[in-house]
Length: 90
Image (cartoon, rainbow, N blue to C red; front, side, top):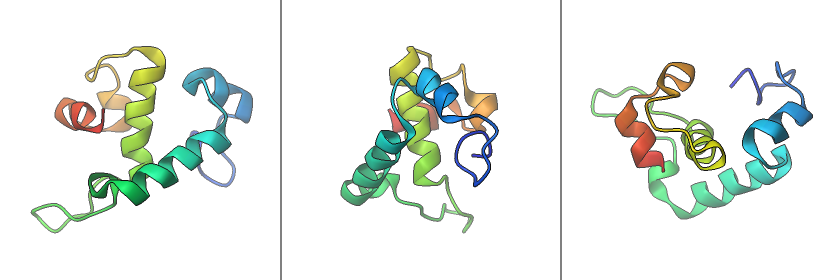
């Protein structure tokens, strides 16, 4: 989240475009549209009552896999998601 989406992100717009193969503005539009049309991508609580992943995190996972052809287990440490969650996002 801090790398791309905080007020003062670690990486600039050019690096975002290179990594995700689209502008940040388009990416955020996709996040908004997917969240509005698919309840799985909306933020919710898990069975233990803890907050689940944010829509931005889930869609980042899916787009990263599509843009780079990476496998679900390649980014589990970076986004702190289990391989199963990566597959479900895609």
